[in-house]
Amino acid sequence: MAGEWWEYASLFAVGVVAGTLNVIAGGGSFLTLPLMIFLGLPPTVANGTNRVAILVQNVGAVWGFHRHRVVEWRWLAVAAPPAIIGAVIGSWAALQIGDEAFQRVLAGLMVAFAIWVLWNPLGRGGDESDVARRGGHQAAVVSGFFVVGLYGGFVQAGVGFLILAVTTLAGLDLVRGNALKVLLVLTYIPITLLIFGLGGKVAWTAGFALAAGNFLGGLVGVRLTVLKGHRWVKRVVTVAIVALALKLWLSP
Image (cartoon, rainbow, N blue to C red; front, side, top):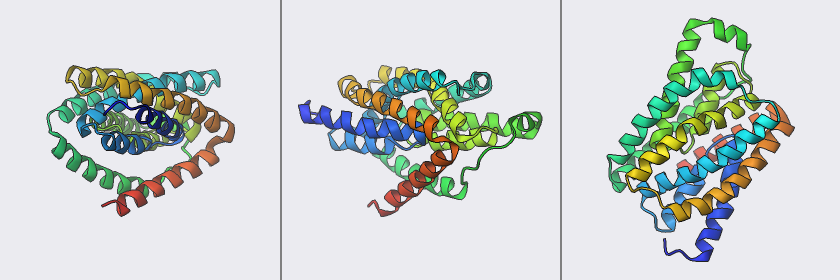
């Protein structure tokens, strides 16, 4: 990046939109990553820099959801350990490949992810106590959070949809699932940012400009999620999934 004022302004503006989308559903990083690459950051550096914004965004989002008393703190003991282990592995893997290879892997993951989320629509969530009693379900949920960390550590973009699928399996509705989503990401994103930073893959100034927008957008997303409720969030998630799939399909 040349460091022009309009570049930082565009990062802030897109960050607001991405932060709102990330908190309500997911996929905001599919806006920020292409923008940073367009502005001249290498793909692997854009991948690392994006985590500065995600970290700041989720600090604000967790605070907002906590104020509205919808954070399921007890689920963190189940979700965080496998997610953190997966995130460390995923971050290490992302640093081992070059920019060209990363772009190819990213494109493949995006297409596969779009197909997966369309094939597995998010439901309302079941009775949490019933889910907790099923050993098979519990194992699937723990495995799901490991995959969340692995994917989030590698690329992060779109991980929100994956987390909502796992939290739905765990029995949470989309409002509480969103609250757990931002809390879970907040537990592993500092570790992945540290790994990318030590690897020289973070453009800090660009990251802070993007983070300012993401923080504001995250607060907007919290308010919309809590005020509008499960049905509205489900509609937004569905629209976001379809829009993401169309973007991937139409992109060269």
